[in-house]
Amino acid sequence: MIYPKEIAALIEQFQKFPSVGPKSAQRMAFFLLKMSEGDVENFARAVIEAKHNTKTCEICFNLSASSPCEICSSTSRDRSTICVVSDSKDLIAIEKTNEYKGLYHVLQGLISPIDGVGADDIRIKELLQRLTNEEVREVIIALSPSVEGEATSLYLTKLIKPFGIKVSRIAFGLPVGADLEYADEITIAKAIEGRHEI
Image 1 (tube, rainbow, N blue to C red):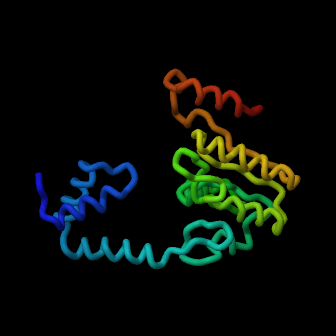
Image 2 (cartoon, helix red, strand yellow; image 1 turned 90 degrees about the vertical axis):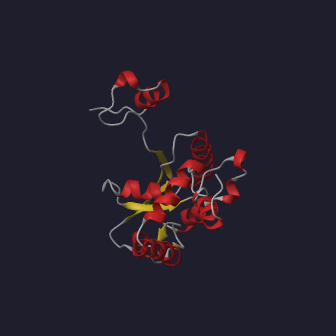
Image 3 (cartoon, rainbow, N blue to C red; image 1 turned 135 degrees about the vertical axis):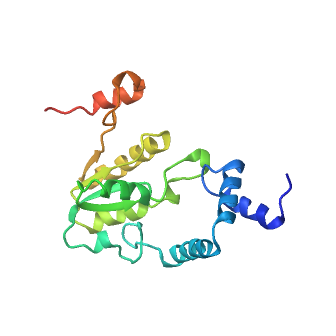
């Protein structure tokens, strides 16, 4: 079906979102068109304000309303520990647990030669700079167990070890409430590998 150019342009914009194909983009465009004019204006204003008022922290590269961000400028955080994550969504997921009280470093990506992303394209140099300037005793690597996450973790470990800083990695395994029989072999292997005494 041929849409009016304005609707086609809207669908095209929605397709720029990750994991949004033509059908999903079409559904979102038509949903937006059914919204009241006030709701559409609020939506547009929220997008523009988020884009204009969000900064990247000059220290940890987290998205924030200020730079340095609230975490880096907090006096109650444990400054001897830095948790390395790939993006701000991962930082938020860890913060929601209320378990970790140290600092963060957001790499803003993972090493992925297939996608043309090398070590110089993410915030590794800045992490190493922080390790020379701050009193860090441990770096926790909290990257996904994907091929890119594993490659980035290994690369970081090789770079950080010479600093004499402890490097640890978050454990991987079975989610709470999952049935063992439905888990794949890699997940079970990671769960066994990350076991601890009780």
